Length: 156
Image 1 (tube, one colour):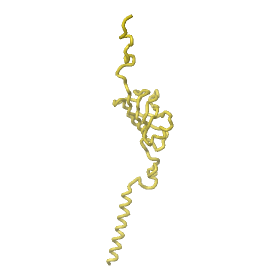
Image 2: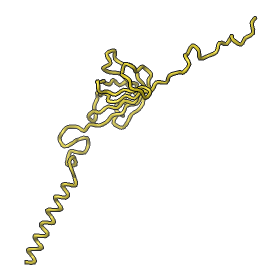
Image 3: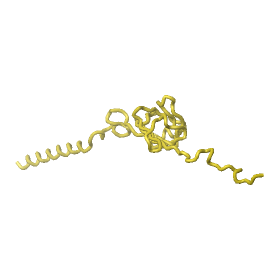
Image 4: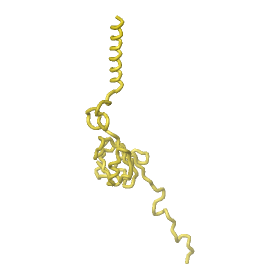
């Protein structure tokens, strides 16, 4: 009788351990979940961060180009090309210029931007989700910035 009890107890313990191990792994931890795969649902979506300078904005405001200078690990492939990167814009794209809400039409060539986009790993085209931009505005207009050299000269 004691032997049957020990066998039953061992069997129950094995079942509990295997159920606990399966629950601990959780969803997304099976084969194919690493290396950009997510349980047979296609490639994993990653966040791309592109840093650079605004090059141009399409007249219809549907896209823009930036001259890339850096980015996160996911964006390195696009940055390495050295070519300006074109990104699409949607009505959901959030744009800020000097910490104020703005639109893509408010952006100008030369503005410093950090663009975030979500796309499958290894993507070649991107839609901007957020575009925080900074414009270095001069407080004095260019034509008034330098004093006239003749103003201090004695009259001849």
